[in-house]
Image 1: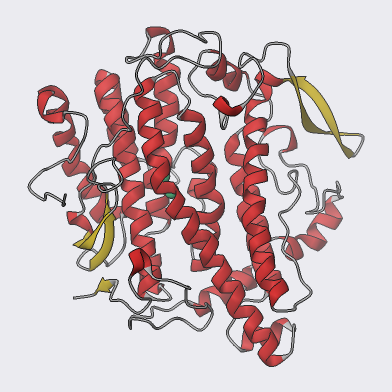
Image 2 (image 1 turned 45 degrees about the vertical axis):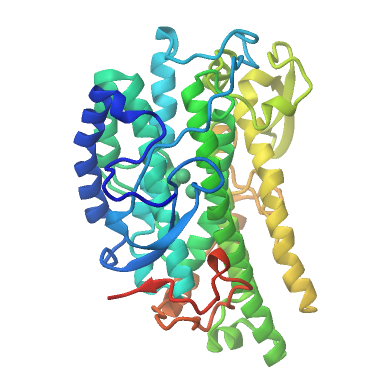
Length: 474
Ligand SMILES: [Fe+2]
Ligand SMILES: [Fe+2]
């Protein structure tokens, strides 16, 4: 099996037998490519990049490696194979057959869910578009581009659903996905975290660790959907998401490795001395972590949401690992604890679980994201250094739901405005932190060479050596 460059849109959805859909997608394709030229990786379109391309969903086909110029990448449409007689397994329609088409009464909500997911995919490409200019190595540059082309494919996945199942308004939404832009004052991306800048590689690694993991949880919840094509397409997207989180986890881990090595070499934890030596001090890494974690958990939405209840009860969006749970999967009468502020302190409050499903997903996410932080701590521990990274309290620096705007310290105390202003610079990246990290960024192009602030990876990609020529700059 190999990549067929004569095939315009590789797919496993019998595109050639659906002329109307094929025409609609072929009409959208040049606009997508124009967007990629305008908003995709900056100054890198002519590079040959060692990328993996999905040409089918089976184990041999989903990861084909080879050097390719990014605009020639084959963005395909792949759905996981259909499950025979799949049944809806949660909500009010439990036990009924899964939908192969969009039921009229759920059309508006499904479209909104698909558009919201779809909007995040090109947004992250836009956020990361300048990073290629300052990659710390060829290996990292290749990983950045891999993430970028796959987010592009995720956009294709959502656009396929819009074109195939939502008629004219689906086509209009597909165009609008290319018109909104991350951080654009007039026409921004839908979700706030996707309008933030990803200005440097530490931010990129934190983003792929924390924010791509939000993607994983959203996709997992959609993979349970009663709307079968959505479930099947998100299941396949999840196979790609794992690599994005790997890039983040191993990236931050390598930054930490380099820092603790330097701390031991210089026998110091003095921030100024470490910065003079060109590595990123651990307190700065903690502040970046606090920022990305808090901004990302906002993405799960308000802690109480009637939309979340509707999406669940009508079968549109399940919980993380819905099938592994042992309750009735209807949840009427169940309760869940959310946080609120009463008389100046945080208290737990019981609310109907159906209304708290955003919070349920957020809590599952938090449990999952702590694991990597513990693995980062083992690098510090192994180096014999008395410092531990920690995810901040769930209520820290929140901007959505009942905790929005409440001033809470990373350890979970409600603090006064005065304390917040005084301590903010210890808790979140300061202008100086960002300027320092920015000052380290500069492109390293020689195979096998790495910037001073990051350790090399243990292994290369696809069993290639670390000093493999992952990118040919031409
Ligand atoms: Fe994605
Ligand atoms: Fe991703």
